[in-house]
Length: 338
Image 1 (cartoon, rainbow, N blue to C red):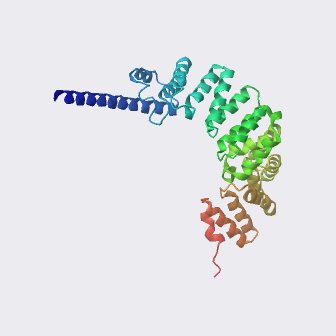
Image 2 (tube, one colour):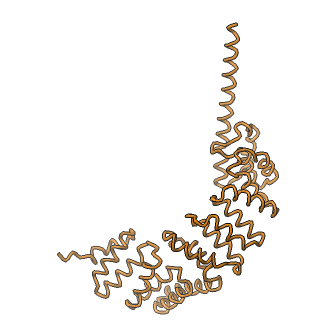
Image 3 (cartoon, helix red, strand yellow):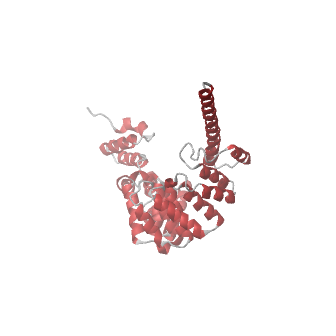
């Protein structure tokens, strides 16, 4: 009778060792899969290891993603869409609340050009977890493909309190594929984006996409052309002509701080100190990219005008933004009179 407990213990130990082995093998393969997925690299040799995986145990990955979906994502990366879709379908009940397989199927159907299914799963994923960047981007992409631009506003309203510039940029850029669809609401959101995200004022992609929404492609393209001409004139040493072109660009696109900054710099270098001031102050007071460059040049302007108090004020501001050239001048402009 004493043999039975020993046999029972042996069986339990064997089962435990077996499951521990399976988990270890699964963990090793998962690590390789994630590395390849994140790097965007598909390797045929990696798929040969999938045969030893039991995707029903464990059915979730180390990061709680459905294992079938993770492997499906890998096949998707290798353009093996039939296998990817089969695995996504099999894993629909594995941790369904994170909408991972719905998101995967959205991508697969997009690549296959099956628009109805792409729209269906994009809407399901977004409805399940709207505050997910990819779900928003996928649904916006689906609406663009279906020429349903008017629905972009309604989707964005669900996440309009977002603090993520990525969503804002994608919303604005999606609208630009059909400019006559841009609503007053979208233009209001473009203005709010630049007002509510001052740290993004130095993000050229957000700033540019907002400018396109507010002013239209033709006007912004003219601004870009004027800026390029100004840069060419500057390189030729024609500072006055360059300054006028920068001023033209700033009027066409008043959201682009570099146009104002460059207009201020070229006027300063040409000796038009008073004319340089409003351009540089506009950058600092209205746009505030927080780079310290405009502050530095404005300090130099005031130094040339003999106003050391203001020169010290702006060179100190430049130093606070850690603009390196300011440290060479702060001891010159900020003289302790005591």
